[in-house]
Length: 96
Image 1 (tube, rainbow, N blue to C red):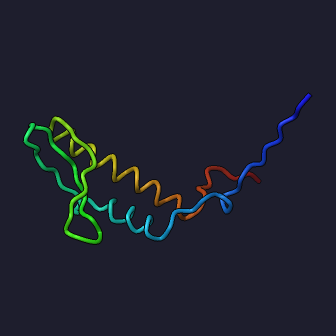
Image 2 (image 1 turned 90 degrees about the vertical axis):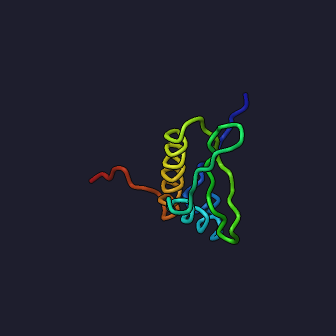
Image 3 (image 1 turned 135 degrees about the vertical axis):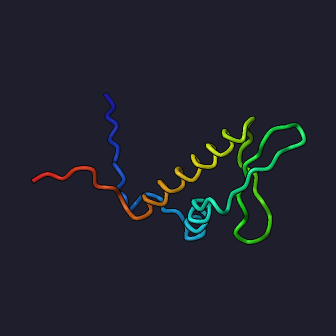
């Protein structure tokens, strides 16, 4: 009979994002760094501005401007949550 024992990693042993990654997430969570452009095929593309240059980096394609703006808002929300967890684990309940 074989037993498998696993060890749970704590917050401090989990891989942490680099400073450059955190700076990118902070940059992406500002809506002023985003834009929507229309492509020749009629689709709308969401893009964010590079931190290092005037280049725009494409992210998603949507059929409507409303869908494109919702995609930007969802991306901002996603990266804001990631930034929140760089500060450490979130306490959801304590006991006395």
